[in-house]
Image: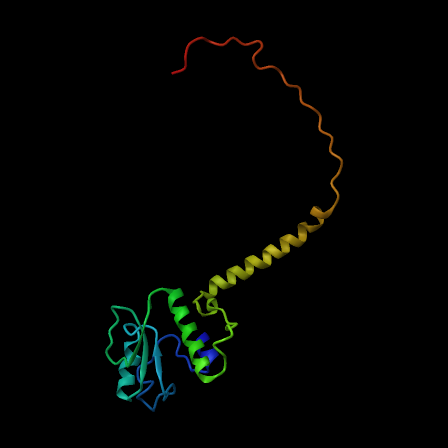
Length: 173
């Protein structure tokens, strides 16, 4: 999704409906100029349909990825979430450099972390925790900034522990 937002591409997220490239009757019919897939094993249906309509395909491939109907492979680890996110970030940066939108001499302001997958429920939990933390900080801010009262501690009476008791001479085993 971040790649599509940066480059202006059209993403197909979720399940690919068979016939998207071949059946003009479908409401979701598309005629793309290029297909880029993350995993050729998982995305076999779009690759097969792309071969029917002579659509060029690019795939992020691992060493065990099937290369049937793949025109160009980008060798990488396509199993790890961070490696896939980093590859999409690098591909987006390269596309923008080739278009002339950004320059290679200057660093790209977009961080690769934005291309990593994050569970929406996890994001909501983090936002709620941050909101609760901000509330508790505001509640106790007054107590911490107020001056401390005078504290006078009384010395407790300390008895000598060695007086008054007999110690046995039996060694402890």
